[in-house]
Image (cartoon, rainbow, N blue to C red):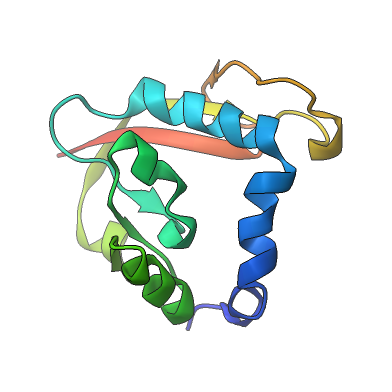
Length: 129
């Protein structure tokens, strides 16, 4: 069972994060814009906020039932994340990350960095095997 209660009890705080951390949010969007497929589909994990909908991503998954319901209220298609990746085989073709350092110290948009392991926001491009 997913541990979602802490998210379900703090939906407003979660959404407020995007407003309070504008440069971090813009850094995340830059990563996504670089890897979103020109053909095919992209999905957003933790879709409740729907922030990737500005990039044409209207489909995603979220472990929280309340967050999925909120996403659907925004007109987004939300699915349960449990076992989705285990049910399908994917090959990772590229990863980018951003949000390096303390969020409160990010005062400008950060450029995407290839690979992952340092930043706290990761975007993955994959293809079905």
